[in-house]
Length: 463
Image (cartoon, rainbow, N blue to C red; front, side, top):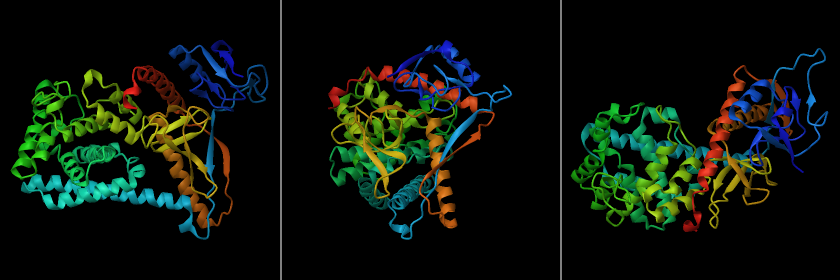
């Protein structure tokens, strides 16, 4: 039974017997973590006044227990660290968890190789005004097969801010092409059309090479005249592939990829029935990718943010059939997103549920099945319900923790460790720990706002 706790009942060093919740979905303070002054200040600043706790009895009183040291001074704030001890096996190559890691690493290597190839295509055109169309077609054909066979792995990959900053056009083209081919597969396109779609998407920004790079690589908002220059790139790109004798379908896809269903796009202000299917797909994946891409002058948003915004389809900018394909390809909580479940566990979205895009399949962090492979569950509206998407900071912390655990596991293997268990210990938080709390509360407020906005999205038309 849940108990309501008012902010006036909170005081520093108080520890609760169960998680203290902002509401049924948002954990404010995990069990065993004491209340501290910075948290109280932030709660007042955000005007949170009531919270929920599963247990009405704390570790040492009606609400909480004072955990001051015997001399009356409060203990320094500490955080609970949970580290996995990796159990080595004689037949390591047959360890399911190890095979999963190898598969992810292999997919990442192939993804990076394709990035290098795209860079060479853009470089070849920039220096010699040539593109080997036959080689490009063969590469895209292989990429289509690769994505079909490795969809749930390749969709987890997203270029880092550093990679995007180094070569924005290449990173954007690669990510957009992966998404476009994924949608094409969902639409059951024939391989020949998938290859054309892939070539179109890979080259859709080629016109940028005829625009000063300080514009499209800028880390600041552009002026009106600069935006006008940028808006010429579909025409410039179309002219480039026309000169190189690419198919007309590729030319039109590049020319029209910034057109909108309602006629507000550019360069020709076309309406729905006049826009090519390749351009409709690229328009959606470009917008989705742009929302999630980190840039200096705007806040990077999660893939969930992007999906919600796309599904709203403000002013009917996008084709509804292609939007449905995007939803059913990635799910409402897109593949690669970390989510917090109603049972308190954290999971990574690894695949879609064909019958219900709102309840994807997730891989539970730090849990394995009976065979040793990563544990996966089908989310639902009960115990495995997705409560919220983790913020960027929370997701980064989890990735770092998993990488550290993997590194620790490798060391344990070399030392001959034979235990398969978790060890928990406390270490003192760094001085900047309160900043993460501020960011957390900020993300909570933002997520509540997104939840409210998502209520405006009618998923019935996508079912």
